[in-house]
Length: 272
Image 1: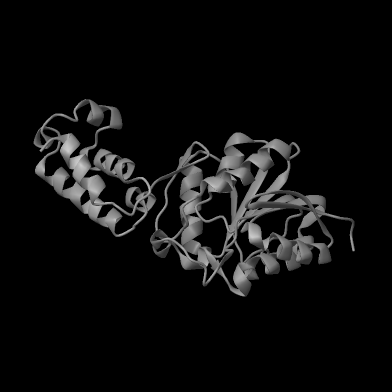
Image 2: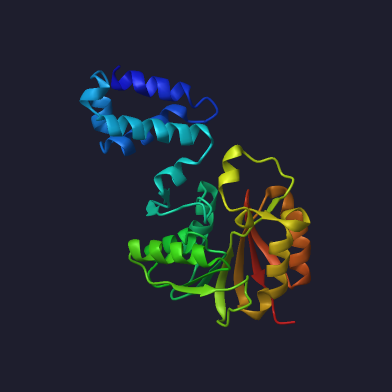
């Protein structure tokens, strides 16, 4: 059996993955300790000339885990986000590509030396990407999960950025006055149809009551305690939740200033 053959077989074992061959190749990289270019250059060689018996066994185990819908990021304990690498496991959500738009908005619009809080930081991806690209920004990050904060702190150290981490349920323990608050909170309704992969992620970081809006509504009720007048709140939510969120935000004297698919931005109007 050649390298090409084992990749073909592994691809066929992953019929429900949207990227079965890529998944198989990534997992073969991990098992073989060889990079993709080496494996593709050697694809016509016998697999036993490339992998020893332990590595072949490891590869088969990795493919078995993936065939059970375990996300590749959890198998590798690694996820790329905004061109940075992050450790991830079952205690944190894997960062999504759409979340990068939150980072881009802050990088493009935040004034120099702005004070920014990432609420529900999880792996720390948003906060770390902002600080890495805008060292002038003073970045805080909070979460209610001790395990998530440990992972976020590890990722900050690995990416060599200085961030203040705070244990807090939303804004309960936040005392700073802030220019921006970013919140990628749980917003998926509990009856929402999700892929099998979601079962491996922490439900408390994904699902919320009140049709997915409980966490966002609670944050909106607190926001004026910490966000400056003219400060911005950036939210990620389902497009179909936009109208409900905006109605509640208006009651809190927030004005919608930007929206793009999953992203909503509100500005704090003058004091009540």
